[in-house]
Image (cartoon, rainbow, N blue to C red; front, side, top):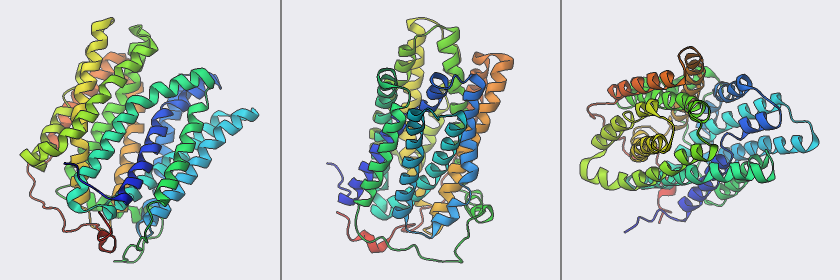
Length: 418
């Protein structure tokens, strides 16, 4: 029998679903616009992908401390509106004939910074809307939504670009953030101002260091921090190289490439559904350790992709295994992390985590691009796969750190939940 998380969570979930679908609808849209509308070359496209993440992470550094002692929902609505305005400037400029590569770069940075601030605030918001025992169910629903959007969004977005024009999916993504802001506003209820347990931090890198200090001082979070950041960086660094290998050297058609990454997203739905019964049977730490180890074993297989139907099947099988393991790991990990964050450090810690992850992805994408130029894409993919195998050593072998009691839970709101 399903768990009821209440009307207010459903509005939050709906806001997440519409913005996530919009984001995946516009997956790689800036790269396509740069190529199709601005005649950008491979170097410019790589700069656009890496710089948006890297500079966005730097710009977001002051935002974590600023958000920590403010009500979460107004911050989230503001970030949604900023993303809406920034993204809508792209189709507007395109219609007027003013669109430039510099504008795409600026918009990528603004959206990247707003993403980090929104994600940090949303983690704290979730903890105030659901009971601690329901966090896994809530995170499982978010995970299933993510993989559904990942499966449906890119094919529909690329089809819309082909039928209507290169900025279509960007406009749809912008509208999705406007709808997300409306959904968050509809949550209702009075959100209490976070308790000021210390001198409120001023925006600045020095104050955000508290987030990194807490992570590095925590025996529970420190190994997971290094593991998740490196795993994300290595997986994302290899994806552009796989695209070059499949679409260039091996001669796969674009629809085959899309199929290879659309079909396996079913595994994310399966994994997110399995997470709760597996946790009930084997326990949180064992599930997280096993799924986290298994997810690192699959990507090495991508180095052996070859032309023809069997090569396509190999990519689908590898991605299906990887995404299924991620579907189990991610909601369990997200719940574990939230349970071990005190209420006055949630935003700064999640912001520090997100900034590190985005900066690492940007750096590794650049490094692996240079590596592929020296060794070829297949060798670079193999090196990323081998390093991923080693990341399982960073997972905590034992869990001696219990969850914090009612960490981050807002008692003023708890009685309103269904």
